[in-house]
Length: 234
Ligand code: PGA
Image 1 (cartoon, rainbow, N blue to C red):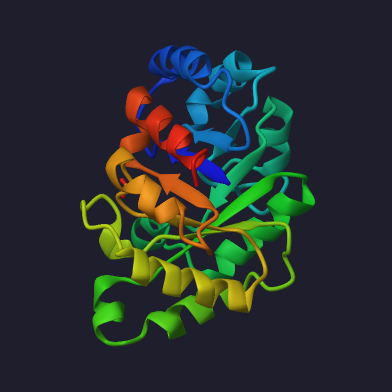
Image 2 (cartoon, helix red, strand yellow):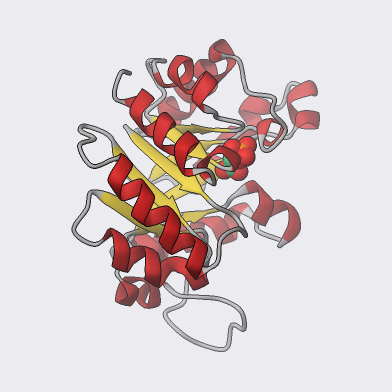
């Protein structure tokens, strides 16, 4: 079971430090649940420093596929490794939607990160229009197929219509999508999309849900810790 907090473009180093000190205290005796926080690039170093020696891992929200080069604004896997970062999210729907991320670039990022020794959380998920058009399985098949052969990664199923909207997938719908993804690729699958302390329990107890990628509710240390604790009962 893995609970990862995707902070998106929130929390600079000072806020990150405060959050990590508090989280460390709250999750001190948490057992059998892997926890990761994914701060913005500029807050990674302080998170790594404060969480060193704990079971709480630190991951980035993106990573480039080249080791170095003329790629303004990008950060490579060896650079993240040097900081002591354990992994990276790739292919988040916000990157696909606003920054031209495609299935091909997601695959390149995932492959390079894994080769460099980072763990990877690769995001997939259909939009509302795709779901309404009955295309969910085709979309998931297309997004997952580019990750074939990468057995070490974790997939996050994040229906785009559920991200930041307060609309969570029903347990039935999440279970169906997770089972479908696991049929394509034998990897752990996290659920993401408006996960909160109030709904985490029923989602995390589903047979094919192996954890959660939490956005909004991961920004508040109390609610993020509550989600991590509810995973211990699942
Ligand atoms: P949300 O975001 O929990 O705020 O819906 C999830 C995500 O984007 O990873």
